[in-house]
Image (tube, rainbow, N blue to C red; front, side, top):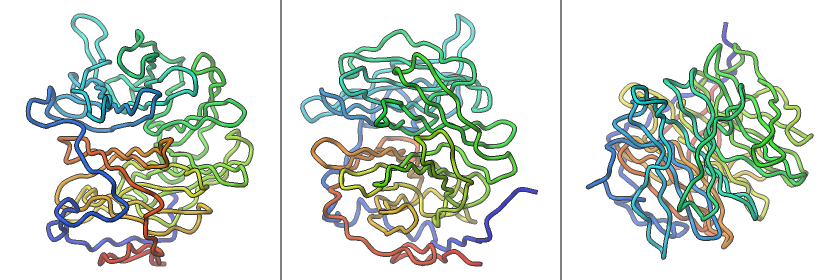
Length: 370
């Protein structure tokens, strides 16, 4: 029997009754809201799984695009911010194996090494259980890319969310598998992807259903990883006090999850921001991805509601989040599977409210019940 938490979540927001944030006055913390590209004339009808990084030459985003997720024509596309404007998306990677065989690409992840290359990790394969990790690099801020190379056997690279560069120089990647149960593991490279160490999985296949961890750093030097879950309806948490070599038992983090991607960033002031769907799957809203939220924590245990980033009809999902050198927070996410939304936030202007019993303030949803 699958291990589950002792909590039952109930989400009662009616999807069609929710207004879109874009139609309301912007919160004072929102500096900019825009799309990375226009849907008219886009070289692909479907898009998902965006990622964002700050390079010495400006912001760079990547995402997979094609007919639809899982179709063989899906490749990895990149757009760069030049003179304040996003360039037209350019396909920089695909799953072509030879003349008569092509696989889809999945889940690109950007990471800018300080003083080093901009790395783009991604997956290629027929489906998540059968994909493999790939890596390409740019030395000109995303304008051109190296010939992609396959990562070593059993090494996936970061599966959805950006890795974390530790003080000892190790790059710690949050990873997961979706075969023989959904399970979380971690991968460490001390030399920008030339050699690797695989740690885990940290959970048994009947212990929750976690994938795609995002890594938080705390003031005491400890690490925390938060993961989405497939069937458990919660975000789950694990901690490490030895730079990711060992991890604690998974436990609920006190937040809901509708089986949708999450991401987090540790701010310069030590707080952690989590961007996620504060919803559950339900009748009338089977994917539970119609509201995307920003929550804040100082300790990884107690959470405060910071911002409803977007809410309304359709899917808003799979966010990525970073803080740039100027202190602003940038997030990108899937907008109705058609576009990539870019929202810039001033973290000093967030107005925080407590999340009590798992309820998001101002929305008629039930919380966690025993």
